[in-house]
Image (cartoon, rainbow, N blue to C red; front, side, top):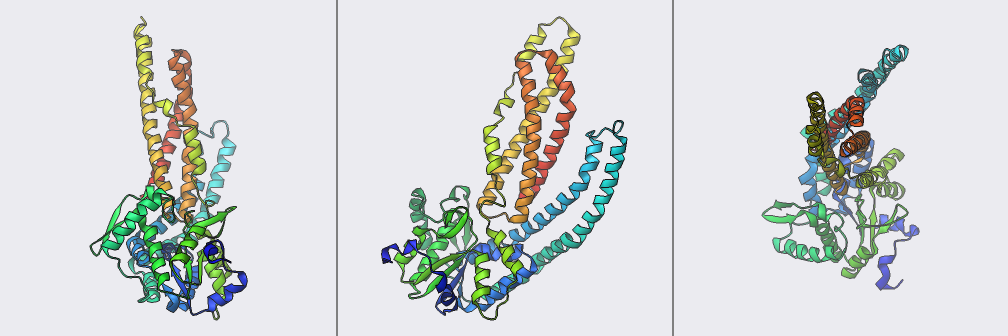
Length: 463
């Protein structure tokens, strides 16, 4: 191949063994690979740590990686506990739904007494295995995470593996230069880091140095390039589970390798022999295949695959499309004054009082629903931001996905009724308005209570 086009090539499969066995191969780990040690099962964690120990002398950790790890470690532990608590809550809600169905009138006891009894028996039968599963499988994991929060043996292992193989703290001058370059790169969509920059507004300080969060990926990339400049004739393996498309060339939903522009940049800036990017699952799989004296379970490789699923395990795209196509902004327009004016012309004071009371109640419901809907939109935006920044891992994604879908379902139950009521008011069709309101009042109330409760659960996961 021509040297100018090396960025379009990846190593041949037959060369991988020699690359893994070479003492000139440098393994660089992204922050998310360290956080995954807190999110996975015990066996997977041990397999990952054993491989990392095996290659520790050839490993190097950029300052940006270790800094982000130290900054966010406790938050990752807390999120792991929250995700397990969410699973526990979701499991228990399975048995609770039958009780709610009865208590809220979804199954009318006077019409379905036999079904009511059968549901009560089913609820009792569901509670026992669910409680057993929670006690056996969920609670021990929660307790383990809490113990890690008090005495972090994972961090001790990471510290030992890293040793002195960590990048130096950059000067403020270097950071300022990268920030300036980053502004131009991001305007031109030059990777990495531009895709989630709009969601990163903050700054951080370490050793009197001011860092801009939106340039975190670029700080990391520039460190890797500087390391490559000092590593003539070496190979660099960069292990990352960052899902963003400003790192990876993705074809048909699969990672093919790093973006050509990234490879071209690092090859042009240095004299390294090979640059590779691997997901953590590929890293484990190849370590099992090529490293001598290393045992890696198949279950560990499979679990590691879930660390970096591209837009499959969780996405708000469908929900976002749904919300955008149904903005519901038409619900908040106030036409009750017009109706009240028409009512005031009526000579029947009893009718006036009756409909004024109903209108007040309708207005209160409409306004409360407006507040709930706006709360949902804010929760959706925050969840999307967390997803973009890799702050949500698989169990929490599943719980959030379920809760967001439930919130959408309640919105879709309430919205048509309020739309129809508003339409009746616009037409001054008080008879139909009253009929619809009386028929659906309880149903709206039930769905709004459920929507409010669901939003509270979503908020508890995100905060």
